Amino acid sequence: MKKLLLLLIPFWLIAGDIKPLKQQELQLKKEQATLESDLFKDGWINPLMIIGSTTKANVGDPDKLTEKKLGLHLSQDIFRSGGIYYQREKAKKQKVLFHRAIDLEERHMQMRLYALVLSLKKLDLSIDQTLLLVKNKALEIEVLNDKYLNGLVDIAMLDSAMIELGDLQNSVEDLYMTHQELHTELSFLSDKKYSEITLAHFKMIDLDTYLKYNSVTLEKEKITIQKLDKKLTDTKYLPKLTLEANYQYDESIYTKSFRDDKNALSYGVGVSMPLDFNMQKDRELAQKNYMLSKIAYRDLLDNEVKFYEQVEEEIKIIDKKIKNHQNILSSYHKLFVQVKDLYENSLKTKEDVVVVENTKKIKEKAIEIEEVNKKLALVKLYGRML
Image 1 (cartoon, one colour):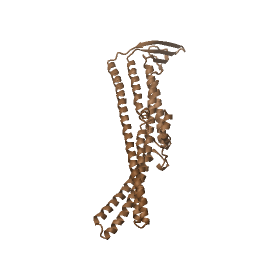
Image 2 (cartoon, helix red, strand yellow):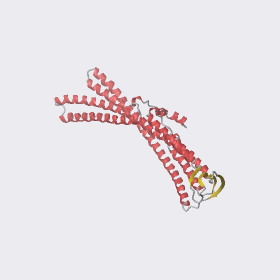
Image 3 (cartoon, helix red, strand yellow):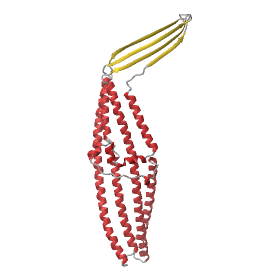
Image 4 (tube, helix red, strand yellow):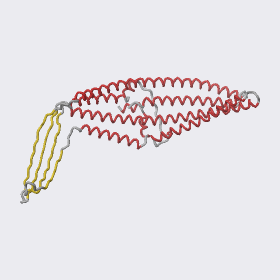
């Protein structure tokens, strides 16, 4: 499974960008899950009880001084009408489920890291774009100021342009603030700067592949576990075979240097079956949990299909926006050539050339921003896969 995912997600290597402490935490969680599963798997094995005592007394027997006892006791089920098998199988399934859940947690962490890097790069583009708008607005104010001084425009137009310039400058500061906030959030996940993290190339995948490796498969595994749990509950109220074994050693020491040692060994097999008042309720509860797990799986599966369709539609819209920006950019390329020719023939000002050139760059940045938005949409998709 992971080999195919390596082909689908080159980003798998970005795991090395996560803080070592975070990676250590995830590894410890896996080891913890393994121990918990192993404990449950062997939980049907009872301990061998060691019982010992020593007493000193002379009540009723003045010659007796010391009595020592040592005993071993074992009460072990060797057959539970399938209960032992179901418990071990459930433990194996739980271990796989726990490990995959931790893998999903790691994937969420990786994808959050990836989304932060993309968002920071998008902010870089937005800052560049807004700074170009500031330059254009400043040039516009210079022109309006000259026209105002010559009585060609009223003060309202100049005032409006100056307010817009101030708003743009504040927008730049807001972007810088957001940039700092995201950079701080990134530092919680990685010791690297965002510029040091290599971005992989994502591709859109088909729905079948998405569902095959989607986290919804965890819910499907939960159905199997609940089914085993239901069977395990049933076996609690069926006959079970128990091995009983006892060994006891007694040592008595008397005053006249007389010593009496006794050994006793007993063993046997017993059959038992509980008649519990709450048996039916317990079984019904296990059945309900099993049915709920199936409903949860179907519900999540339906939601994941809808989520895939939503991301697919989002990407289609982004592609259309990119195409629109490209068409506008093509027009600005032509306009820039024309304005530059007119400037060289003294029919346009240098400011006109700069404004058109800046606007062309703004459109180029807009295309880059949409490309980042496309990657962010795919991150949402891959973030729900294992």
